[in-house]
Image (cartoon, rainbow, N blue to C red; front, side):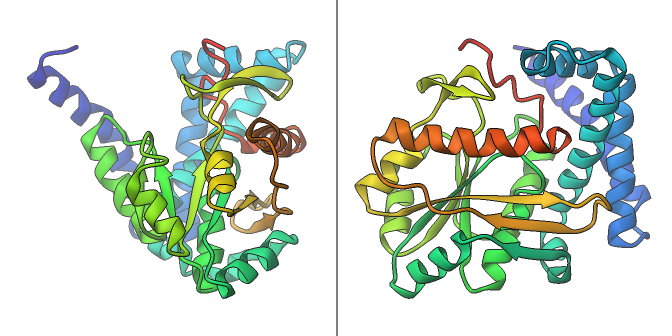
Length: 291
């Protein structure tokens, strides 16, 4: 590990590009600022060698025959969308106020409304696909404020902005690794809703197919759903071609059964979304590392 003074300096230097982009765009409209940061991240994915190599390594796990030019196009497109997503999370209160940008569909929303009316909690499961905060924005606007589980950032500057953003989207906010803790269980048993992104590698998980390849996967969401008789609803905020609107889809709740089968049902759901819109998934998660 780097000495503390060097680590602090490095964290400051890493934060300067993002701070500069956010400051430069401050006087623009929301959509213009979002696109500006998206363009910046897309440029990084196109020209920054470390990012490109990491992207190429992950994408070729699933699309080994994809031509180099197509990989480059997909990397830029993913970068633009992820840059917009990052901006919207950092400005989550303003993002949530733009309810005209959201179209809601799918049977899961009615199931969640019924659970809320009955005073029951629920788990909303998604991945780093599209704009996942659009899901919580829709729920909060309908009186179903939803907390979230998130992974803290090692850079304190990113961490401060990230936490403030996701807290604006709904509370409570719990760190990754605390799934199943007393705080989360108390929230769910009291009728609370919680959103969990299930597409990150979980070292203590089981190997389940994801996009056709084994990936270490957490069973915690399914285990909680079974133990406390909760709905487990896959939901996705799919970004439109214009970049500024979202189709927020709430799929049918996953049928209760074996935790492995339930988690595999979610993996299959997210895999289908990614294959339909591969530029909307964050390919840099190292999802298959060590599996």
